[in-house]
Image (cartoon, rainbow, N blue to C red; front, side):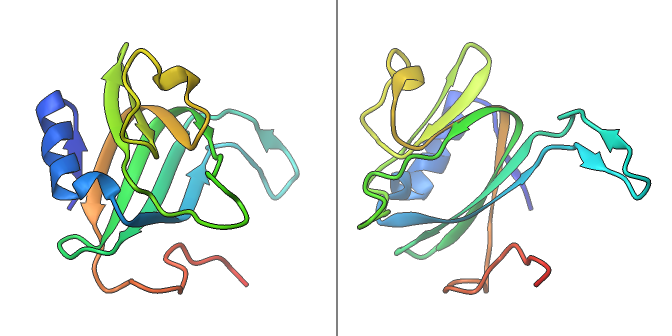
Length: 146
């Protein structure tokens, strides 16, 4: 069941529940723009969905795996701390600013500096989340036609 994050109280409760994603990692992402090319090769070029789903797994129980759904995606900057070594999250931030929800992989970022953060950063109109059970490990959660 999806749970919305709309208020500062929602943010605080969620971040406390997931311990700010300490000892977690982004496992997978799935983006749906809304644009496509049809069978007759005609293009529907509108980004009218802009939904980013992110799977984060954690070294804690309840929940060990969380799916975040950002809708009305404005932008995403995927910039791992060290692309050749580690991707663990030591802490993260969720905040609301000017009607947008921001998530980043650092717990020391505030509203004044969030837009200039150079790590992994997501900005969207809405955010909701749900726990995911029975899918820990290396197998893909978002199945791709192989």
